[in-house]
Amino acid sequence: MASRVPFVDLAAQHALLARETEAAIAATFSRNDWILGADVAAFEDEFAALCGTQHAIGTDTGLSALELALRAAGVGAGDEVITVANSFIATAFAISHVGAVPVFVDPDPLTYTIDVSRIEERITARTRAIVPVHLYGRPADMDGIGAIADRHGLTVIEDACQAHGALYRGRRVGSLGHAAAFSFYPSKNLGACGDGGIVVTNDAGLADDIRILRNYGESQKYEHVRKAYNRRLDTLQAAILRVKLERLDDWNAARNEHANLYNRLLAGGDAVLPAPPEEGTHVWHLYVIRVQDRDRLRAWLSDRGIDTGVHYPTPIHLQPAYSDLGLPRGSFPVAESQAPQLLSLPMYPELRPSAINEVVRHLEEFWGDSSSRKESREPLRAGVSSGS
Image 1 (cartoon, one colour):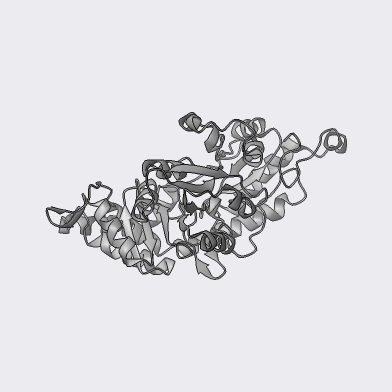
Image 2: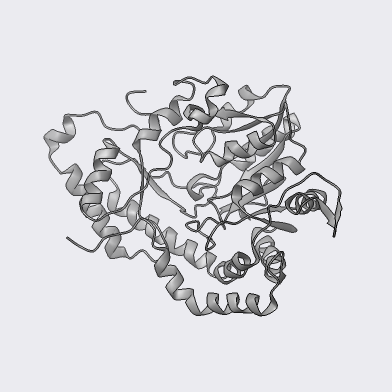
């Protein structure tokens, strides 16, 4: 058997940056500015510049970033916030943690981002905000979302936790709504060596509120003007992220090359491939295909040394944590029918073309080339599955 193809290889990335990250960490040790130190402020400025925003506020996680952005925007108890049903559950948790109710919308069957045509039917007198998710690194339809928000006087908070550096109509995600949240979970396109997050915004008042909320409600030392939290970005993580930030665009370009190779090699096969982005750049946090017999295929690949991922096997409204919403199976047919079909293939900047060829070779072996086999089953459609 050939050497294993990991789903993500963080060791390869860290080996390339070892000297620089060790120097950055050593500098932090020499300063001993462990809490909201110099590297936090510098990283915030640098990340804001990347996104094209005036402010960035580091937090301990992406969940905190999204929660504090909603809280600072005035979303609270009794409010409703519209988001998509097929995201990671942290999107909904942030809404719940401010006391609001997540109101779900099915994804577009081709892009997997929120179906803009279904948003307005979910708006009520209690709706305060929309949280679009730039899922897998692909920007949502922000023009359509912004137009709806403007018509109804709603706040837009981008969940950009998977889309560091992505572009929509020439603008970076993060600059497209009232604020945006990013995660620096280690496997993200820009990942820390632990947890981390950040909020970006052009609203100075919102930024000031988030700075206060993340740091015990302090307006100055020992003057606590809000009941707040300890949600600060760690200085060591900021130091590491500053080293990595310089490579982000190059890493995203490498991911794009890998996605293009997957697309070429898998074209015409038995998988539904990611739809090409039409209004921006996809940064390919994940390369996700839709297939029949997903779980059997995943086991087949694992037996042959190919690691894969599943994001996410159960839509949020069917998670036990949200059983109180009373949304039965069938409420969001696109999310529900696609969830058992989605498979994430290996994707990281250091992935070699030879490894991609190996992945595709084993996929083709699984599917085979028997015309009688292909005729014996109904193929996947571009939209929802044939059984939905």
